[in-house]
Image (tube, rainbow, N blue to C red):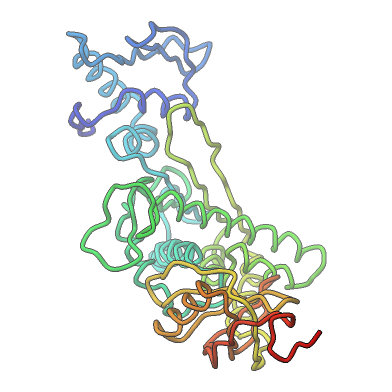
Length: 384
């Protein structure tokens, strides 16, 4: 029999929501006291979930439900319900790979590759949460590692070989180094597990759309345009590894239950033949786009918060187009803040890179802060 968790850690409302999410139907109950659920209209098997902890039989009833589920529905209990009913709600990211191996097994080397590609996908999702870039290298690596450290790996499921990552929805992943991720709301010092996983979902959706577009147009353009939605060299490389040497692979994100909210799972499928396209996209994104030196003068219209691996990004508007400027040093960032506060323009020199619809200036330096423009009628040279 599976181990029964401490009843004090189980939230009965989350248990009800989790059961409904996996297909159980509400068939009766008494408000604020208990609910009764059944798998389907033909089934005689029902569960009575107590809701009022002050009831004298609360513990006995809850223990009975938990034992019933763990004994009669062990796979659903372990994979879908248990991770969600304790104090910490988790989103699950399930990586599935079909192979010709016997059910529930996988070739050793292919299995190692599956675990590695799953981790690489999660890391790419964390990096794109901080910044949309075609190629990251070591950039944002520490933040992405902290995200991975907050994740639990679940048991493989029955059938195709599956790796499941459980991401605590409310875990705060700090931008800067700290000893442990804490359970707090998202603020200026970090991001929640849910928000990072949402960025991963957006990036996977963009990648799936780019693959579909490639089948029709035979153009890699949508992979480059998709950078602003999270596509990157790192993500396409990880997905190529997931899809290759398989009979089909997919990633399913199941969102942890929140009272009054039932988000549908998101599934992204990748065929083995698409691994070739993903490898090509990865190669293209690993090469910098057409880059040229540029000198821009304009007002500072955007100031971002500092991130874990740099002083921050500022926006410069020259009156014709806007640029995202990644400055080279902390002092340069402070100069940009000062120019913004004083409503003065700055002159910036950097390497122009157009990524999707965004113009970036990398390795940028503020060459000078321009004086405040004096209206012509206020000029001492103005004569009436």
